[in-house]
Length: 499
Image (tube, rainbow, N blue to C red):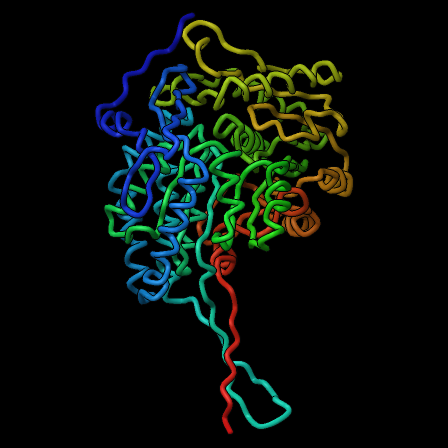
């Protein structure tokens, strides 16, 4: 089998050679208590990058214990001092940006440009944003009217304790940052469990944070499989909250498992986001925006605009523009400067996405382009040509199920009410897009769409200040913004008798 080849950059070789000690407890890097390892491979080549520790219950127990020991000192550190540590971590991420981006691309497959200008850059911004929040998280004095006497009543926000953060493989560095940074800013300590497919950047982030001055035990890391390390973290009675990003199915299991201990939860789950192009939109901008909405990170984006509703009057024009760009996209290894789209994360995910392409054809949709594995030098990786379907009906699996790959379903509509109704017919409600030059329509449709984020004349914009999360089966709670920070606190009311 032919295969694209890539030379591992010298800057990351020492790290990869020592990645088997991928469990970080306190300030100590160690292997799994059970001695197990998990191979992590380059999805573009199939080549082994490193072996990481297959952590389990014993490792999680030790990590939670270390986090508990560090909690008292971390929560009592002055807000300004805690903020300075987070700001130092942000600076360190910038300092090691090239190394972190390279690891992200090798492990995940995405183009290096995406890893650099999205994942790493945004991660630093997230730590910096929440570093600025530590001195601004306060309570209130309340105008109470007690039945007897007088009282001064005030509220204060306090940290929860130990937080468990479970992050997926599509944006491992960035999503780790948007869970850990606010948790730490609020005074909690954390145990981070990255995906077994993409643990390398999270491990390096933890090392970098410790080097930047984060006290030992404030952030701990346990690599391993979900049913072992992840489940142990969810079940642990000493964990006050789980923040999880992943599939809706797994999210439901976490809800059930957490019931016994009444853990707090933030769940950012699946999506099947609608992207609506009205006839008064800038067609060129809408087509480009719709292309980026679905094909960023090989379509492996929870909020991907995978259902594109296009008004009948401009349908053919938009589809032609999308197809032309999709046919010209350059597949390749993420470290290749010419690459515009990398591979899917695994052979299993490739098979799954291919299955949806086949189902779309069998159900009667028209495959305009793509949907095939490339041959030649790319045949050894998990590559798939970006696929575009037309003549899609709302009940088809390609229009109802989260595919998590480079597959776009285009659906015609005739009027605004129809577009909104069909967009809202999904069980998911993570995000949506609206393309129009009518200001009234933009506000009206944004109000009616059942989604946690609505973008107008743009898509896939993320900022640390803007909360992100879903409606319906897309979960509850929010990452990012003040809303995220408050989710890592609990409220206490204090009554002071004045008589």
